[in-house]
Image (cartoon, rainbow, N blue to C red; front, side, top):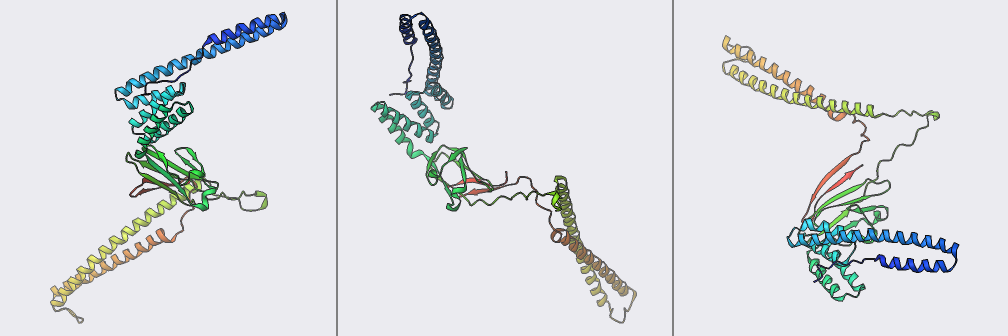
Amino acid sequence: MFAGFHQNGIVSSHFHEAVWKRRLRSAYSRGATTGVAIGLSVASWAHAGDSHSGARSADIAAAQALFERGRQLMAQRHVEEACPLFEESLRLDAGIGTQFNLAACHEAAGRFASAYTLFLEVAGAARVLDQRERAEVAAARARGVEPKLSRLIIEVEPKQRAALTLERDGSLVGSPQLGLAVPVDPGVHEVRAGGPGLLPWARQIEVGARPVVYTVRVPVLPLAARDPAPCDPGSGDDCATPDGAALGSEAHEHALRHTIGYAALGIGVAGLAFGAGFAIHAYSKNQSAEEAGCNDRGCPDQASLTLRRQAVAAGNWATVGAGICLASVAAAGILLWILPEPPPSPKPMAKVVPRLTADVAGIDIFGQF
């Protein structure tokens, strides 16, 4: 009923002209000098008023054109193209009709939280203007959208509530909003938390088209690493600290050490396999030599003696393989687990942890930024 109405006011320049004429006549009646001064002042005021009226009229004309084009696009079901036109029209000339159409556009696009909020604003403004029928229509549209709303609740541990600064999609979240189910449009929403001396935290929530209540619980944020106290060279203390190059060198050495350690571990595994293979071969040859008559006193013929010698040679190689295995594993253990780790890098760090439950899909982000 009110969809096509665009409420605007046009300030006429005739009013300024009439005021200017009255003041000019009054100025001449009070004397020449005073009259000239007041006349010039009033003329200047009238000129400024006319300029402002012209600019305002241009904004109103643009707003009306945008409004009409938006209505055409809505009729053609080009919703995503129509909504920005209504928004610009509302910016140029705020009118209840434009606001109502923008709310209807958001509803058609599935942005139910935006539509719900605008319908309520239209209903409130219409009541102030004593437009009861319009207020009832807007309130009814808001009630129709309400069951489709998804809501977001932010919860914070009580012991850290006073120390945290919270943001939802870049907007500050005051403490009265904590625990409140706030309507949100479908899409990705981000909750960020931080505070003096605390590691920042962020979480992204993917809100779907189905109405769901999402709960974001902000964990207790850990303390950030404090910077070392400034060193006074005159105090005699050793102020030498590793610079970025030194830290980079230590990190490179750490990586190289791990590479060599894992290579040694691989050689140890290969040595174990090598030794085990020759040990099995030695056992097989020794069994064959004993079956041919070899014992502690010797072997009865050349063939059995050859078998005995092959068993001894295989056993020697098995011993070599076992030695390689033991030495490599020992070296790997020293390189990988015994030598100290390098100091942590001061560079920014981040940790992303996915979270998926029955009613929440998102990621947690911890770290230093």
